[in-house]
Each structure stands twice: as structure tokens, then as C-alpha cells.
Amino acid sequence: MTVKTAIKGLLLVLLLYFLYVVVTAVVLFPKAEKEENKPIKQVSEYMGEKEATVDRVLLFEDGYESGLARMRMIQEAKHSIDIAYYAFGKGESTELFLGALIDAADRGVKVRILLDGMAHGLRGQLSGARYALASHENIELRYYETFKPFKPWTWHNRLHDKIITVDGKLGIIGGRNIADKYLASRPPRNFVYDRDVLIFNAKEEKDSVIVEMKDYLNELWTHPFTSDVFSDLSKRQMEKGKRERNALVKKYSKALRTETDFVKPVVDWSKATTPT
Image 1: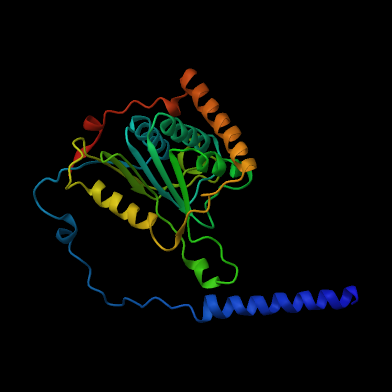
Image 2: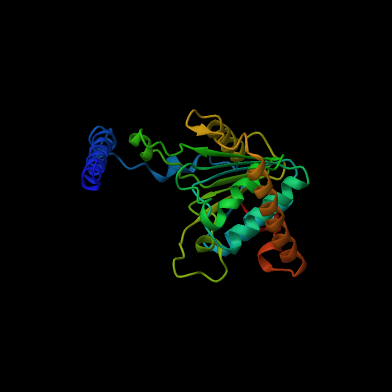
């Protein structure tokens, strides 16, 4: 077989694969139904009951303050931290966030992290972080709908949630992922402007919205599209994870010693939040 023949064969295979993707992921993919002339709900329908609820809330327009709140939540955690995010991005805020999570796990907090299976971001500069998390006895890491080259229709099925709950006391939901471009004090050029809302329930009451958030996270965690891809790490991966874990904790500990603002948030949830 000549080189020219081999190249033609390869191009033919790629063309057939491209046609397969177009047909199965575009042509045959179900289209959303149009919602034309749908009546707009009255404001009162969104407001719920007129009486006060058991929760208090805090709106975050500022990304840095939103990052501080997440850090404080992790530092206060006593039993559990549940996370579902589209992606982790590069930057110091991400490394400090991961260091705080590992520190929480070191003191016995059970941490569950669910990320999108394609856009999770734990590659390149953060490639070691996935082993640092997955190799910790108190941390579980899972992916939602990993990349399947021969099932192109699954490529559309992405996890865009951005949720974190701590114990049954605190929760944040909104549009920000974890990265400098969302949370940095000095916004980079690609900074993303967004909004988050924090829910606070000091008594961890059963009627809290946080209970619904945790139930939803539990449903995602056990969903058929979710896979535990790090259940059986090799010795090399375990060693790499330990090295990266030590590096992240060292960075976080140094930030605490030097009183870096991002890891020293002072928040009184009772005073900062508003009743609903």
C-alpha cells in the first residue's frame, strides 16, 4: 500500500465518520418544540406564599464576593459538601478553592464533586487535580455524560448546573463556574459577569430550599448518565494525586498564614442575608 492510498483511505474513514456524526447528532436529534404565544405568568405566581419562608438569601452580583462566600462555606462545613459544576477553570482562585476542599476532607467532611464529562476542565494545568481529589478517602469525583465517540447524540447532553451545598445550612446556585474569570478580585480580560444567590438556613429545617437542592444533587449523583470514572486508580495515579494534593494544601495553608483576602472571608450569614 502506498502512502497516497493510505491517505485516501484515512480521508474516506474521516468523511464517513463526519457523515455519521451529522446524521446521528444533528439530523436525527429531536428539536425543541416552539412555545409561541405562551401566556406570561403573573408576578404573583412566582412569589409563592405571602408568609415568610424558613430561608434567608443573599444575592451576589460581584464575582469576587461570590468566591469569598464559597470559600467561607467550605471552611464552615462540618459534615458534607456537595458540588455540581459545569467546569473548573485555571487560576489562583481555583487552586485555593481546591485546597480548601481538600482541607475540609482532611478534617472529616464528606465531599462529592460532579462535573460535566466533557467540559470539566481538569486537564492541562489542572490534570493532576482530578487525581488529587479522586485519591482522597473523603472525596468522591464523578463525571456526567463522558465523551463517547461513537454516540455523537450524547455530546449535546451537558451538565450546566452550578450548585454547591454545605451540610443542610448553606447553598449557592447561579451562573458562575470556578475560575479566575468568574471569581478573581482583579478581573482578567475574559472576565464573565454573572449572578449567584446564596440560601441560608441556620436551623437546617426540612422545609428549606436547600433540602430540594440536595435531593436534586442526589438524583444527579445516581443518574444513569453519571459515571464513577476514578473508582480504580493505578499506583502511579495515586502517587500523582498525593503530590498534587500536598501542593494544593500547601498553597492554601500559605494563603491562610499570609492572610490572603480570598481565604480569610468574614461573613455573618444572619446579618448579611435577607428573609424571604
